[in-house]
Image (cartoon, rainbow, N blue to C red; front, side, top):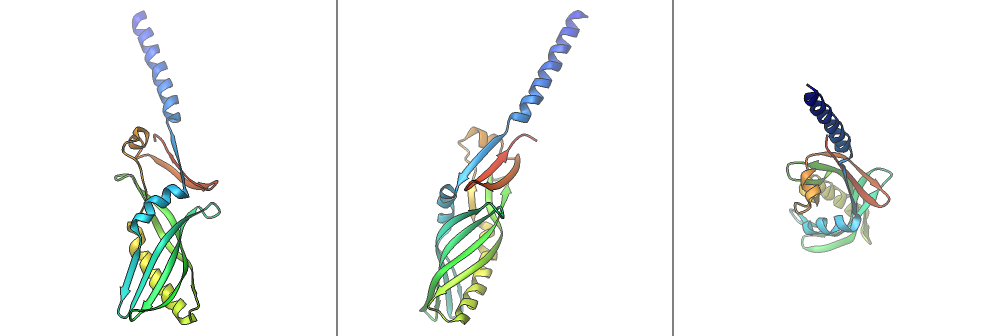
Length: 180
């Protein structure tokens, strides 16, 4: 009986220690805008064509906004009407991140066009570009991977299905993962 009590006590202690350590088995991944940039650049240039017009987005620059907890892409914008270049400028698209645990990938979710500024272009073209860009963001950005967890990193692979939070802080994207 004494042996059973000792084994039982030891088992309970080990379970308590395991539970205490499981709560600490978290992993925080800190991603800079430069690290995200490398992944995002693979999807550019983005081109949207319609009858008589063509919109091209190039040179994405990742912007992390701690105030809104959103990720943005500043992009170069070029528009051509009937194969004639009519304007170039900059635009800003931003959204939140969606995490898909089955693939370990982060996607830009709820992309929103915040601004478009074309240089030396009439106002009606700015409106046209903004309408094209709104359509392009809704169609394209849900499939653009912003970051993919690394399968060769054991921690990332093990905790792939246990995302706790994603925040923007200190110029970095902070991804916290851990056991449920």
